[in-house]
Image (cartoon, rainbow, N blue to C red; front, side):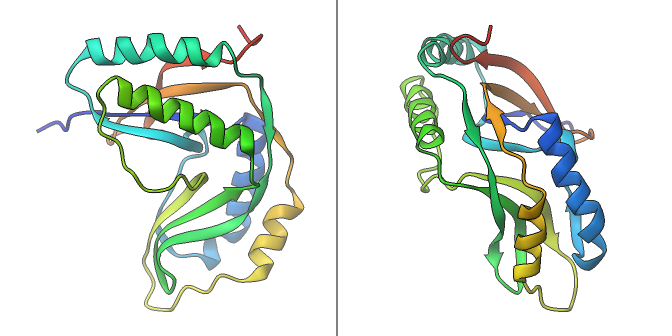
Length: 191
């Protein structure tokens, strides 16, 4: 039985930054036994997870609202900050890259979140923690230990990247890469 596709809105990660992240991962994967690693084309920062969507009408309504929102947003820069985990520290569920604090990113997320709610989507109410998922499910009997070396080497190659649009993605669990861009919402002056 084929699963229903899920949708989410996210900031895509530029190709240059994807390459920087992938290069670091290639050098460190052997030391980090996670069950699965995210394909570099799937790197993103989630703004709102919509889940399964029954109605194209709901997505069309959201699309119209997002087009109005992004008309007033100027492109902005983001930089990677370091590495962290979700779940138990000794056997994490998610290994991720964080970004430096950005008021522009938080404002964008609030506007996107509000638009989704206005269109009737039920969203996760956890506080926004911008991150780029790199790997899932620790699979070693040894304890995971996050070292300062990881953060230092990860930040050492850090190149700021520009955020100039958001994407509506559809998830395909049976493909790699597994996220398909369904619509792009370019910021002011980026059309």
